Every structure is written in C-alpha cells, then in structure tokens.
Image (cartoon, rainbow, N blue to C red; front, side):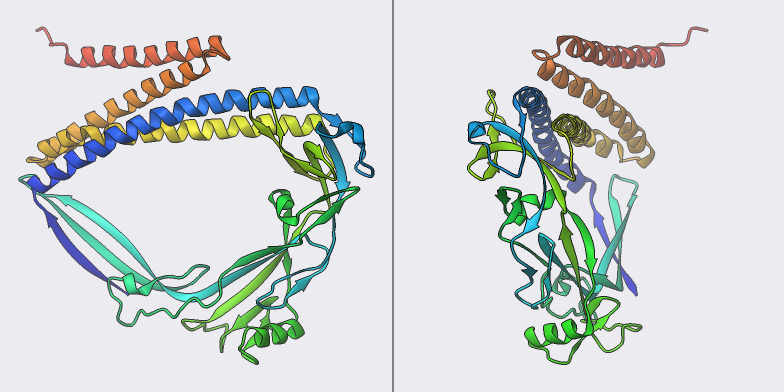
Length: 387
C-alpha cells in the first residue's frame, strides 16, 4: 500500500539551498575540529588516570571493611545478593534474585516509510519523487499516525503502556552495599516468562481484567496472535542478572564511589564476574582506545560532510547541464575527502603532541604525504600533452 508525491525545485532555489548548506558546512567543520581536539585531550587524560589508578589500587577482601583503606582506591570481588525482590508496580510482576526487572512493550501499528529519488533536469532544476508506503508491524514505540502523509485508514491507537525498568534499592557485596541501578551496566539479561496466573493478575492490575493472557512467555492483549490487529499489545519481561561482580572505586564507609585522580579525572570500574584489578584496568584502556577511534572516525566523517556542503554550490552551478554538475560534484567530493583526512590527521597529531610526540610527528608526516600525493596527481592530470 503506497502512493507517490512529486515536487520540483528550481535552479535558483537550489543555489539558495546550497549557500545555506555552505554556512552549515562551515559550522560543521569548525565543530568537528573542536571535537577531534577535545577527544585527543580526553583520551590522554583517561590513559593517564588509568595508569595512576593501576599503580594506586589495593585489592581487599569484600567480606570485611578495612578502615585503613578509607578514602583509598580499592578493588573487590564479591557475590551480589539483592536485599529484596524486584517488581513492576504497574503490573505487579515480581522476580526473586535479579537486581532489576525490565519491561518491554510492543504494539501492532501502522508504520510509514519513505523512499525519495531525485532526478536532475536540464537548466539546473530537480524533481523529487517520494513514495510513501504503509505496513503493519510490531513496534516498541508509538508511531504517530497524525503525521502520516496518508492518514485515512492508517490510524494508530494510543500507545497505552510504556516500557520501563525497575531495580532493587540495594544489594549486598559482602560487607559493602550498592544500588541495583549502579550495577546494571555489566549485568546480563535473561527472559522472564509470564505464567497464566501472573497474566491474569497483571491484566486485572492494569485495569483490563480477563483481556490479557499468557502467550509464549509474554502477556498478550489481542484476539488472535496468528492474525494480529492494529492495537494488539504484547508485554515481555527480562530479569537483570548479576551473580558476581568486580569493582574498582574509592572506599567510602560501606560503599565504593568514584575516585578522583591527580588530573581531575574520575575512576569507577565495573566488571561482571571475578576479575583481577590488572584485568579491569587493561579493559579500561582498551575501551578508552575504542572510544577514541570511534570519535575520530565520527570527526573525520563530519569534516568530509562539512566540506561537501561547502563545495556543493559548484555542483549546483554546473547542473545547468546535468552531466557537468555530476563531474564537478565528483571532483569536489575528492577534494573534500583529501581535506578531511589532512585536517583531521593534523588536529589529532597536535592533540597528541605533548603525550606522544613521535606519534604526533608521524601523523603530521602522513597528512603532508596525502596532500602532496593529491597535488602531484592533480598536476599530472592537468599537464598539457605535447605532440
């Protein structure tokens, strides 16, 4: 089920859009440079903080609190014993043993998807053909049908129950305590099947007695699960499970909290199971390196997009004859790629100069080599052919 919508954009309107895009491109380039530089500083500071922590940490027995370690960075390994059952107050579903209980709600709804194709026209204009398609799908968030292009016969009911997560207030870690929520980042999720008795009780608690039923471990609201109708809802649960945990943090009474290093960074490391302090710090360094490279990649992509937006005006001007515009766009795309690599590598190198000067010099050299290779290739392509 779909329909098409066609819109045309004149050449002059496209020029105006390209100029606005260029302004945004400049802002994006500046923002990417700032983010890349900040990321290098963050990475170095985190590396140094982890190194300091590794040298200062003291492993201690979680079964008893050592007063001599108060205010110090300590490492413990312990079983996790929740102080109470955890329950979902809106349905009454309860679990014994987990540190948390997560509720997932899905509703069968109309979903709108768009597919837009753009065709260039002689004279620099464009025509966009947008196809709107509609399908029935299970979704875990409300699909607002009031914003659909074709609202008639595609109305969705209100999403009447949101997903949620509840945690135990505290859990014992030997002689220490921690909130369930503070431990959930390293916990595992395990399916919590719903029994017929639980389904009946939950249905009544929700205010729909007799309407909900247990189906394949879920609480289902609807007449026929084999042929669901718009508005049918299914609710599933997961136990948030953490039998044992390892923690590195500052000892504060019977709790472990963030430890502040000399460079004002904070340390608080969590790991599922029993892990040595050395392993936890090695994992922290690995995660820091991964995050650093992800932000670097994102910064380089942002630089490339920014330069593409800045140079897009040239492709639009060339689109008076569409084939010329495509050739120009390819050329500006190549220039944008080279500039993104060169400027990104330069910023990263400057950010690392104090901590790792050899790496910094290597990156600056690589950046210069990229620009040199591009300029040399460009000159060869432009050189006249002598008969």
